[in-house]
Amino acid sequence: MVPLSVEGIDLFAKLEFCNPFGSVKDRAAFWILKSAIESGLVTEKSTIIESSSGNFASAMASYCQLLALPFIAVIDPNIAATNEAFLRRTCSQVVKVEERDDVGGYLKTRLRKVQDLCANIPHSFWPNQYGNLRAVEAHYTLTGGEICQRFSELDYVFIGVSTGGTIAGISRRVKEHFPAVKVIAVDAEGSVIFGGPPKRRYIPGLGASMQPELVKHAQIDDVVLVPEHETVSACQELLFRHGLFVGGSSGTCFAAVKRSLPKLRGTRPPQVLFLCADRGSAYLDTVFNAEWSKQLAPPDVVAMNAKENAA
Ligand SMILES: Cc1ncc(COP(=O)(O)O)c(C=O)c1O
Image (cartoon, rainbow, N blue to C red; front, side, top):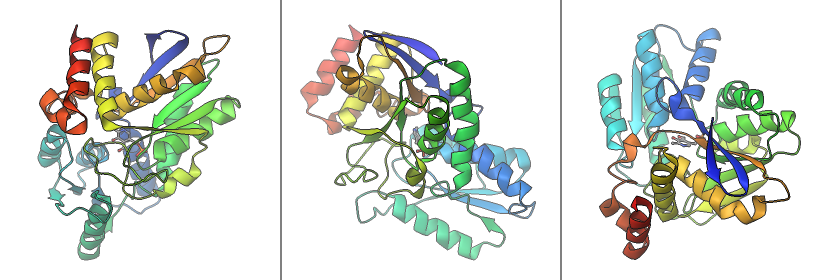
């Protein structure tokens, strides 16, 4: 956890990209696989099959390699090129779906593909990162435990949401330890998780085109929806002003903190934490590419922000 200088609040970033395989998803992948092995659901005959926007599959592929278990990753065209390259070098098989679902995303198509594969491959195991309570347990025990150990006071935690596992586990743990803490869910505009209208989204990691089951287990005080062009400016600001090279969902959380500043500031600077789920490397061709980012906002907005941040 590192401090950032932002006027009026004591802001900290929790760098989840320091996990062994590079993202917050290491937690859920590790815990789900460990539990499945302990309960006998996964044996040496098993083939693991999962849908992922990149990070969960990268973590699962790596743990499966360590255990010599075959892993099939089901991905979609929004995946970052470096994540896809990593998966093609580590998975037994990578299946890329191309068809959008009824709300313009790929999640439902990916999940249908996982079901097809599971039906046809003997001894298949679907970790179901979207509904597996072990993901919540992972974040309650590991990520949430670390936060409670590090802080003596905590007022706000900003957490990006996709499957909801991270926010469900952390929110339950921090609220036990700091009863007055406010947990703020952060999502991308166009994601339907919190009931907003669906819209095409380009940045992988956050959001979903359906409401994931695990979100029901989270204790959320407020939701902030961030447009994708604001994610781009926030990632640039984190890199150029704060020295943090982080991915899209981290930028989205930072943008949500900035949007909330008037509400956060009080008589004493509140202790505020946001999660940096992965590193910026996988986003060099997208979020950190001014040409690519033009599709997210009127060109003057993105160009102006890039110029300001570089100055
Ligand atoms: C970069 C990134 N940030 C945030 C999340 C959200 O985590 P969760 O699925 O636990 O809600 C994900 C999930 O895939 C992610 O890849």
